[in-house]
Length: 206
Image (tube, rainbow, N blue to C red):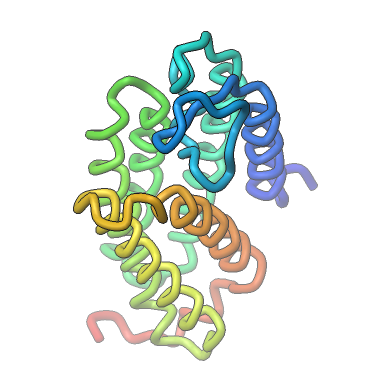
């Protein structure tokens, strides 16, 4: 039972810890350094990881946020390892498995002072794994997941563009949270509503 639902349980624990972290966040955002508490519209999730809050106060939310990232990274890594077994092409399965799982190590390191470089590395590995999954999903009859994978990738690219370009920076905290929710929803959807048989008809090399 626990093994079957380990990904779901891990994600629930992760979200719970991150929500608790927001309750302990002292305050301050890139738009208002004197703001009180965590502002879901203007604060980044990464604001929870610093030793100091944006307003300069000691940040007690850090303990809870790092714990949440540990469970999130472990849950996603477990998903990639498990989902790779449903893919009939060994090479593609290995990309999903290893890039996805190892990428989660870099995802966790986003909670460290190496935040910016870890975002680049983790995003690249995560996107590569999801791109391979999307390619195989498009070869199935899983029409809903074709749509969801497309929406997810578009949102991911859009969020990365905002992060890298500096344009429309005020929308980035909201985009980040939308992407976070889409990631979790897509992972759980693929985990519970697809099976190995959905992909076995796909001819290798085509």
